[in-house]
Image (tube, rainbow, N blue to C red):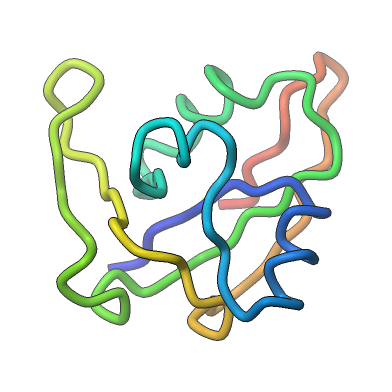
Length: 110
């Protein structure tokens, strides 16, 4: 199963220098790295990233993240993937820019 992380481009570029992404400020505050499934992604983007420019959509195979990936209830009881470890950048299977639409919402390229 493919899961997705939305990351500001500069944060991801910085992570590639270190080999791992430690998390966004929201991830660090919550103690885990937030991901979304394809079905959850549009709501996540609209809720948390409206108006944010220079975002990347980064895909990962959930199985590659191992036992540090937990599926936990969030919005309305839906299970969301949360990673309790640094995210290795070499595990990314695709990286896609997310330009804004005319309303300022990042375009989800799925």
